[in-house]
Image (tube, rainbow, N blue to C red; front, side, top):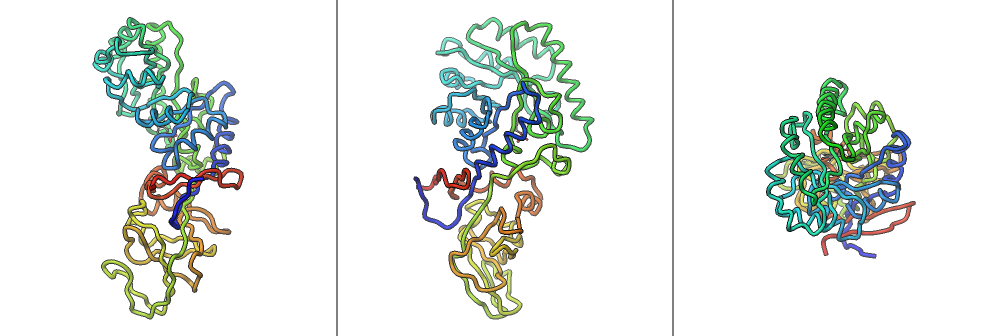
Length: 384
Ligand SMILES: *Cc1c(COP(=O)(O)O)cnc(C)c1O
């Protein structure tokens, strides 16, 4: 097994991915399929390992944001349906076609720029409808009427599916969500009049699929909640399904010392000991994504909370300990120790951001260790 030579690592519990997938499936209608969203290196968890577990847990396909991400998965041997949800350059369409990667289409201009003679296999397309997200997608029936004939008249273009994305499916107020649904059905009404071939439809992200399973179409795109995180506080309160977080961040004390009162810690000497204090050093810093704004947050040592003191450096930071601990003592930055827990949500709140951003920001310098059924099954250390 690959290994690493530092005392900080991410643990990804693959059994949690399976648990979350199973709980979503129990909530969906029996014929609703699940695409596992593994963009951005599976939200920072590790794309190949999460994709494998998601498929073993019954996912029907994978969705990513970029063609590069899809290529990586194809080349790693994933043969399942694979969708790129973002923009792909038209000149890259032949590469997608060759590897049977489905692309998102929403512009007439784009379709005209794809050279059908360069396609070695049919190009699979999902048409995106912008029903109110305001990001990418067809907004009107007029736009749709310009795109559909191009697809229809080109045998190398295959329209597999049509999809949209909700902007507020995780909110307490549902009026905008319902407005998006109305716009979707209006476009669908028109689409069904002009398109006779079979296509699939997909609308739901984690929030919509968990909260409104009965309204879901052929499949859902399951992202944040597959990783065990609720898309918002509202959904966390509602708890439509139980989730287990897969991600934790661990380190070890590499230095422990007792300081006299009035001694300073780290750059800028912004922290001063008030009394004699035990100070521990942790080998993780902002180059690992443990950003400077986290100064003041607490981490777990010996099942207790200890505050980060002084500025976080590029590769190290310091904490105030309640007593002396041996070098090598485990430090949990995100995750559980005994009855205490620092959740991804707590870190996100501290940074005034959303939980999605937290695992994504832990950089590739931190090795990922994959656990399944309590055993280490794989280590991924991109720094080698
Ligand atoms: C990222 C993304 C998703 C997944 O959303 P979650 O809230 O993480 O479930 C679904 N659809 C699209 C288009 C996305 O970009």
